[in-house]
Image (tube, rainbow, N blue to C red):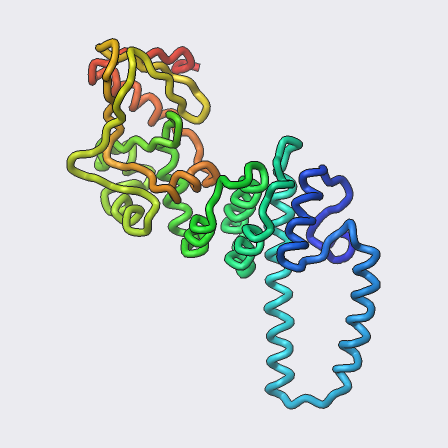
Length: 287
């Protein structure tokens, strides 16, 4: 482990990372640098206290209870430091960490301090980093929601989000759930019903959804790739966006779920729009 038995590498921290660590320290009582020297002295005092307590005779049950508590708190500490370290490492200089609410941080770690799975820790660290970069992005309700998710749900949602475009907000497009473009990635009718049931999406398998009020042209993005759609009328156009909408929690989590673009899906949608009579300008399609 790095200096001080911490999972945090204090050798070359950016200013936003340092502020984040201080925020975590203030919110949950985890004591990192730059107060290391003072805390080392306090730790030595605590060690003396523990030695004194060790001289008190304990029965076996009491000793096992103490051992269990120490192990549990040790695991929580490792989890907190691991999530914090990952989040701190991903911050850039523009992060508005100073306005990160410590109440939010305390609520955050109350929900994730027992998470030790590396993939789920990665999700939690992206959540912390996202909130630290732009405070107010993720609600406490969304934090609670992530705490209720299991690893399989997170993996399914990440796969689902490869079918999302961006137009003012994240816009999944599931045209026909039984189409191979979706099913070969594990997204089908039953999976969409499950995502609906747990509160990540709203799935309307019959009538579907449309975005209204477009002018002659609209620019949308697929993982940063711009595409211009040209409609037949000069105004009051609408766009079929399929059978699924994201809930608020789904919207917030879509930005950090780690989904990857799918070129075949991109081409599938271009073809769909052409077939529906729209003109699509996609200069990067063949690149």
